[in-house]
Length: 255
Image (cartoon, rainbow, N blue to C red; front, side, top):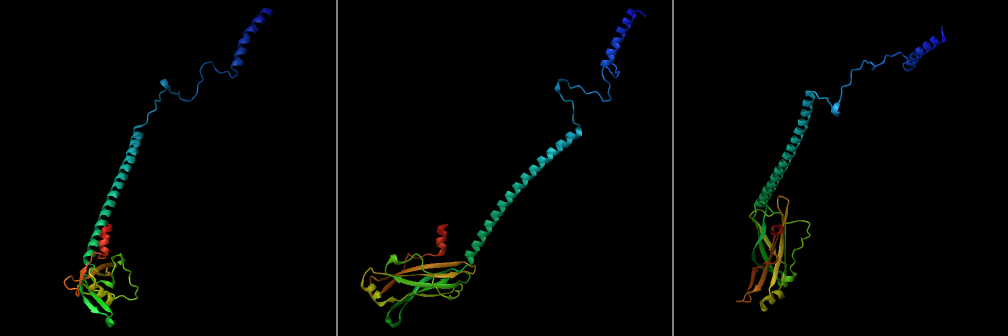
């Protein structure tokens, strides 16, 4: 073989060697073939995936379920508020009925009239008597009463001290009553009333009692003793407005 022919055969073999170097496994030129399905195109960047109809139905059912639950909760809250208002109104009406029943059926022990005077022991002075009566429908319990005297209006207290006794007089039945005796007014004071014009003395006191409903009550009274302008030896006893109240009057004023 001539040298020129060998040179041509060598040039012919060179491309095959270069192809083997670029494709050592002998793969064919062109796109690779795989078993995976082709990827759908996404032109314009939009997703072409759509939810099935049953998923949309489930989604809206859940939304409406939540909204229905909220509506039900609001209704329950409203009903609770209305029930609370109704309960409060009924409770207030019940208290008013109970208070009215108590006022109608409780004891009312009040001073009524001046019933005269008596001479104290050894002619040391005079004792003045005042009647009281239970005008209520039930008994007055644990009744106590006191009556004092003074010549100065400023010495009449707003409240009398409750007597410190171990036992009370007991009950005062409906329609019944009794008498309260004042402290002894000395004979010299009685003479001053007759001999000194416009020189009165004041008799004042308090009645304490309980009603059958367990409430404590008190009634005050005050009378003025002054000589008659026609006959100074006669003493007139008139009701005086100071120290003349009861617990119910003051409770009404506070309200």
